[in-house]
Image (tube, rainbow over all chains, first blue to last red; front, side):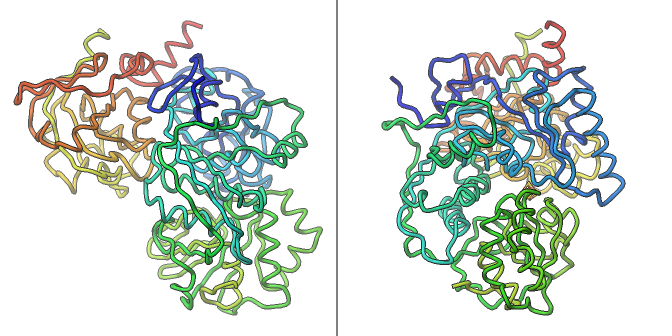
Length: 417
Length: 173
Ligand code: SF4
């Protein structure tokens, strides 16, 4: 029996081939296809050009409006309208309208990500779903047109990098700090064309929210996907969200890894990625004291319950610095509601936070919290490229929810410990 | 005539490692939606003469990580619109590689070029055979092994890209 990694196994079970190996091109059957505003702008024209009048399986297509929501411009509203018309005309069965949440969070919460399956989405952070044992990857608009028309897509089987995380994570150090440190080690494009597989004892101590942070940012070093062998928590969670059956896959013991890395996190300190690359991480102590104008808590990287709770604990009974805007975007309506009911939102608001809708919003400089020239933001999101959140000469530091919350209170980059 | 499309002969344009999609077409030009309009700016910083002098079927030959950076499809679209017949590199960034095939331009790996950059020099006349996986250099009179394009992707090249192929497929269903 060929010994395979998770990505190799999933591509094998989804193709006509007996066993696939890295470097091979395979045509694979897709289980779920997700698109968002990109559908309205770039995919629909391709479908029209090709003459696609029905999608291969409307029950496997998920449409989510999350980037420009609620619509800040007439153009955005028109894009949304186009997507809604598409959903109606093509009888798409899963549609999440304005306010439901950020696509990668919705896919997981609504049970569309299932262990062992293959999911594609027109968004680079589609890697997030790999925390639930699926091969989930970002594709372009042309790719999506092919998938919607035929249910299949070609893939180059990736090499797999194995990252083993061990050691007990110190207090106030989070999953985000682990991934920032991993990105630093792998470097820009360090995982290009490859899949990452996470292993190690530390995973057991981490919440599934943190697992999603680890898989979310894998794309920042070029990875096609990032997967974690599903544990009982994952299987139970998915079964709760969906009646659909699934077959989890696990890596073979003697699978071949292109590279292996080991990371002991027992002495890890909070990390901050300096402008303008996510892989620019340094220990927080090196950037402490830098003045900030804005702090953002949210996005598909760190807008989940655990993140809001950690931040609330830090700002409880305190006030944010008077020259700082503290913006919070829960990653989904469900998260928003739970945080509201349990008092987490109240704590954040009392400290001076502005709660925005469950949207991408400020994360990609769309709306609801842009930066002016020369301004500095510390953010829990995933990209700090120049101009990502507004003016081309604003600056973004990426950090964990704990570091962002502590910095919002102090008005400068601050070690949360 | 599909058979003709699976061999490409042209002049090599040599590039080094880590050429980004920004190097191929700077983001400043992307507000224009017309590929033809922005094609003259291809490689404007690295090789400003490229867009003017490139001939149909010329071949890009680069080293590691060709096409890193933003996933913009326009980078591959511009090369196609200038008539580039094939793109060869020691390795590719994932999305650039996908975009090239989706637009009907073969992207082929030639790992040896990173170790011995003299295998193909700028301006060499080369011929590649996609199905056989060979590269012949007229200057050196030598043939080299390159990655074979699998039959599945040959379809994309023959059809002229993913959308024309999808059109054909839908007709036959
Ligand atoms: S939250 Fe940010 S990174 Fe995530 S999908 Fe939205 S824009 Fe992209």
